[in-house]
Length: 250
Image 1 (cartoon, rainbow, N blue to C red):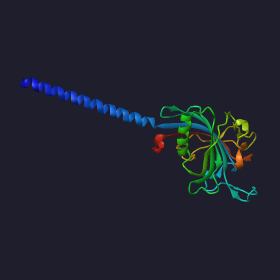
Image 2 (cartoon, rainbow, N blue to C red; image 1 turned 120 degrees about the vertical axis):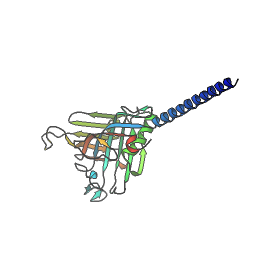
Image 3 (spheres, rainbow, N blue to C red; image 1 turned 90 degrees about the vertical axis):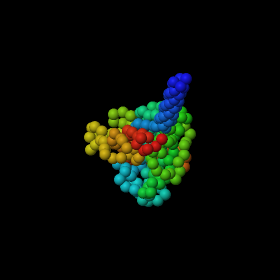
Image 4 (cartoon, rainbow, N blue to C red; image 1 turned 180 degrees about the vertical axis):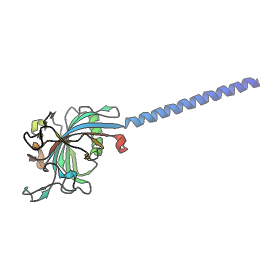
């Protein structure tokens, strides 16, 4: 009887130990799964242009270029930009971002030494799902880790995005809302092949493949009271890469 009781206690102890280990394993698995759902990565190519002369001095100074004779005051500083994104590959948790297209237009303002920019408008191609939009909005906060006086999301617009050997073009609603056309100038001092600036950081992004320089033939935002248009100013294409592990964010 005593021997049976001993065996019983040993068996009961093993069962309890097994249940405890199984429960602990399940909790660890659930915790790991929960963590993974917050992970994200983002690789995209941007067709970008702005009102600054080439190359945009905002990457080296706390003030944009001065625009003398501009309506509203001579010597006014601003950097009015259009950034047309196409996601090459990306995900946020279970949400795939591959192929998503969206546009950010705005103005960095006259002095961003304190990380305060003027305004920006985000426009999505209609094909981008709600889940993708939510993920992209979160990621953009790390791509551009700045504060805006005004940031809004505009009505969807069909987005054209095309990059070729010596040119790139992007349009919203056929150019009615916004347009960027970049072209490598033939017969210029830039030579026949692409001119690429490397070892230069793009905002909050830890990795990029270099700024492929191409002056714009036109860069315009044509919607509302903040509309603008420039020709022959700064333009480039750039492929950026950033992930949650780079910024310690979930």
